[in-house]
Image (cartoon, rainbow, N blue to C red; front, side):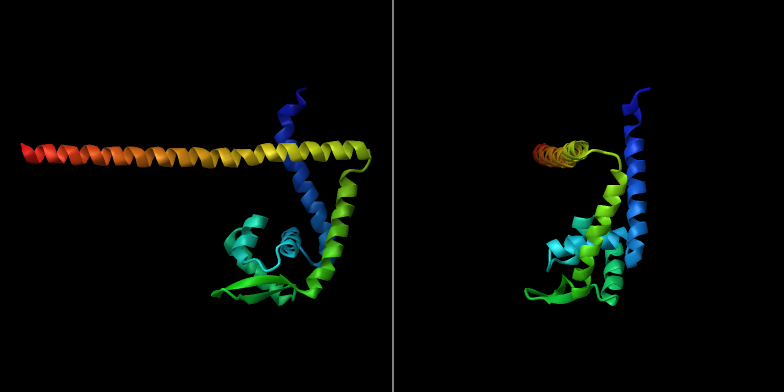
Length: 177
């Protein structure tokens, strides 16, 4: 049997099971994986705005608003005025959130240890190294797609300019006749 044939299915299933297991552990803290992810990124990006936090965590902007509202109500974060833009707000983790971060990392360690049960340290390190390489390869696809889109847009603009020039020349010729 060709094991690589099922790579995508296996990767997706492992990811789903890992997330479900982490969320089982995180329920001890009354948090979801997404909330944990937000707190971790907020810790690293204190004072960011919600649009940037949505980008960092890959959360849809409308969902982000609801999550932040709920987390603010739970006193996990604060929205403070942006000193340079009175319409904007900056996000900050509260002391309560900061105390939860150690627990979040502990639960991540527990979940990771469970999934790697029976796997040697050397194999773990090699596996993570390979995942990082696969991730780098996959991230390059987005860059290639953006470059392709930019090239197509440039080509369309160029053709559009050529078409406009051609139409202008045709109009001038028609007027001369």
